[in-house]
Length: 411
Image (cartoon, rainbow, N blue to C red):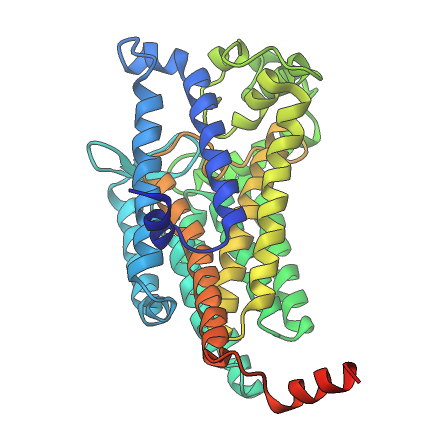
């Protein structure tokens, strides 16, 4: 396949594509490095097993993006939004009923070759659904208030279900929705009330946790309180008796990395961390690549945020605007959460670094989120090209006013 033919399929913002490829290269390097101990535990010592697995799912992800760009118009997502929301509710309930405990990610549904995480499809479904409601009710303030009410009810239902197994994913969905509501011109007083209600719920959960069962669905509240307590006061005698935790090892990895890093593939801390290849992968990146990794990874996401903002500003229709806003917001927020946890800036959340951490179906749904943004970018490019073609004069004759201007300039 030549370059010209390839460009027919690789559409959308080229810089976002460059960020995606850079993150892929980093992902394959760091997954191979950080899964050595895991390979000996679960893959009979085959150290390339998880590297190849990551390569496979990223390949599937890229295929999904290309299909989205070439065969699915953005308007189709508007039509699918309600169905996607209902399907997400069903899958989340199914995960709670028959799912198993995942590694810090709540309930997962085993599929044999991979584990399906219901929260991942909920992330995509919420973006589509909220974008549809906001886009279809922008003309009338009264309709926008009704849409706001529907969104609050809908997000409360799905977040309440996810909250029982995965607090951080529920918080991520909530924060993404707030940003989309802000861009959707919902009055600030409603947004402030929403933020106060969210903060109040966290406070209630924290103080109610000791009075709730420490097992079953409500046992997650105990976990949330414990993580907050450890973050606030990590020097307690009880914590000291537990020994080093993953966030402690993350701090050691960052300290070992220093300025220059210990070198690619030379991480030692990853052998002691169960989630070195997932929730704490950023600390392993810094251990191996030092300041270059510590600055380079956030810089890639800053570039992504900047280009995403440009795409949003270029949109001239409501649904693509809100769709791009949701896609950019959820990827950036998740990246910030992951890096902040590794740096010890916030309590442990269990969120992977988008497109970098080891994953299966999560890689595919992250790719779909990137694909939504690239689809919007691609349609903007098509509209711009169409406008140029409509205004193009094949005879090379300038409009009358331009001819007159040239004559005047020439005297």
